[in-house]
Image (cartoon, rainbow over the protein chains, first blue to last red):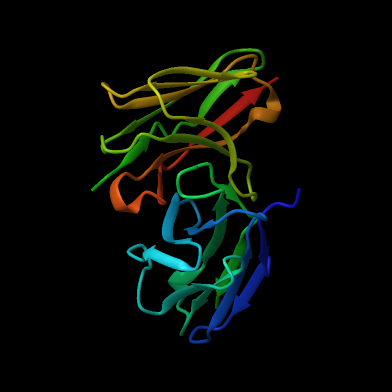
Length: 114
Length: 113
C-alpha cells in the first residue's frame, strides 16, 4: 500500500518568508509525528497528533512553528518568518495508533532558507 | 535529560561478518525500542522493534534488549555491502508523551567487499 507522502520534496525560501509543509499519513494510521533532521544531526522530535489533537507540543523550537491536522489525516507544519537555522529535512511519520509505536517515515521535505 | 546514546562509529566490517551496533539509554520508564536504517539522502526505514528483555530475530537481524543494564543492540549477520548505512536507535517515551521517539545520533556502518 501507499506509504507516508510529503510535499514539497524540496523548498527553497528567503529568510523571513512563511512556509507550509504537508504530510499525508498511511491510510488508517491515527497517529502522526513531525521530526526534523539537520545536517549531521540526529532526529529531533517536534510534535505528534493523535487524531486531530496534539497533546505534546514541547518539541516545537519556537512560536514561529505551528502544526495542525484536519480530518484525522493530512497535517501541515507551518514555519513563520523563516530563519537560516530552520534549514533542515522535515520528516513526517505515522503509526497505527499511539499504542503501536512502529513509526513509518515519509521521504521528507528538504527546507533551505537563504 | 533523557538520552539515547550510540557509538558513532564509523563501524567497518567485511562482507559476511557480523556487525554489532549498540545503544544505551537513560530513561527507564520506556518499554519500547526501535532500530531504523537510513541510507544517505533517504528517510529512516524501520527494521526492528523490541519491547521485552531478550532477543528478537528477523532474518539476518537480531535485536537484543537488556533493561537492567539499559542497553539495546542490533546484530546483523552475514553483512552485505547493501547494509552500509546509518543505523538509528530510537526509544519510545513513557508516561504522557508516549507518542514521541527519542533517537541516538546514529552509527555509520560500512560493509566492505
